[in-house]
Length: 200
Ligand code: ADP
Image (cartoon, rainbow, N blue to C red; front, side, top):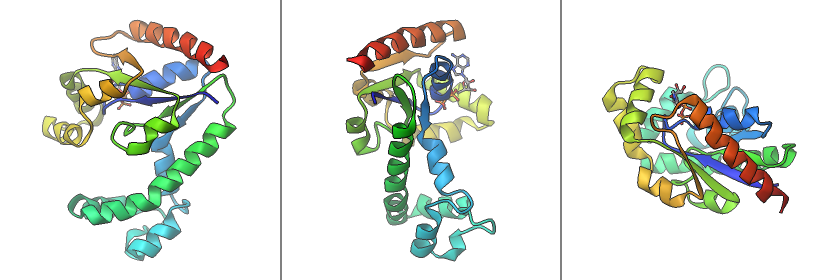
């Protein structure tokens, strides 16, 4: 199956663009959803997390105690690495399973941290970056999440730069001061290109 990796910074419009591809009938695999599912109640990562970090990190409903884990990995890089050593292979395996099961001309895999996390680029046929200015990211996320400017800036600082994401891209959607109509037509052009690439 031909795989397009869709990425972009927080608030760039990844979900909005993914939904437009879905409206064209393209199946989506969302790695954020998968990451959440494996640590949901009785998720497949939970026994491994309990063994590695202790039952204190398991909430009453058998899901990950996210607040507690967030506090730990925020201050302890080693703990973050140990957590990722558990979650990343599971996310990868689940993503590959969903890709195999997807039915359509090609599949879009939404990977927010595609540029940041090493091997992703080699696991997709094409990288599509949703691009906008940092100011646009800030204003969208402040509105969407009711975050302060500082909170959004702190998240952006932990992500790849706009330049790095553009450098990694095969294709770019311009989503800065872009109307929904203009966004839809950009997606239409890319969709037709991916359809032709997928059948080669
Ligand atoms: P991401 O998934 O990259 O974090 P979203 O697709 O959720 O970004 O977009 C962030 C916010 O900005 C959402 O509330 C979305 O509705 C809004 N948004 C995204 N693109 C546009 C656009 N072209 N015009 C208006 N609002 C937009």
